[in-house]
Length: 272
Image (cartoon, rainbow, N blue to C red; front, side, top):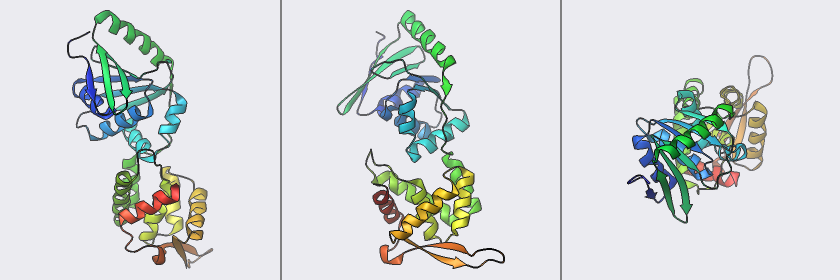
């Protein structure tokens, strides 16, 4: 056991942050949900993150990437070349982290996380050879969520800077307000923000489909649900040719000031 190889913390994020500090190339094998979420969060905040490779069970990846915040940030790192995700499982009970000549077994017990490590050369070489061979035959994970940077950039350019600012503020409020397990519907979030800014349904749904959030049909169905629940209303806007377009508006009877925090709370309650 290499001196000082073991790490302890209150969360995966705390332990992985220590590994990040000295790693150039980090391989994570069989992570649990908390570990994937922590990796994504750390890669987002780190000034110079290592190159990260994740080899994980496909069903776990699908579950964790169902979270828009995690998936859209992960997509940013994939686009930047910082993160590569492939599907595969070794059957280990605990996640493994391999970086800079050390192998750690990541163990979570209650509110504590430990990384039990060794830097014994022959063992590390064996682990490297085993998982490099598994990595080479593994398939890339199909991450269908668009990168959050692209969402923000195109929302501001195509819909308006105020709408983008409201989207960012509401998303930040959502991340602060929700519990660790609470999920929310990004289409609901987008439509509420659009309604706060009197955006046309056609414009926001076309943007949403083009950027990869959801189809126009999904936006339309969600709009109808929000309208039926009295959260938003629509006004017809005549156009030169064809049917009138619908302008989205918040139902003032359901909102006090429609702050980002209020929109976030409504989004969470609607998604529950």
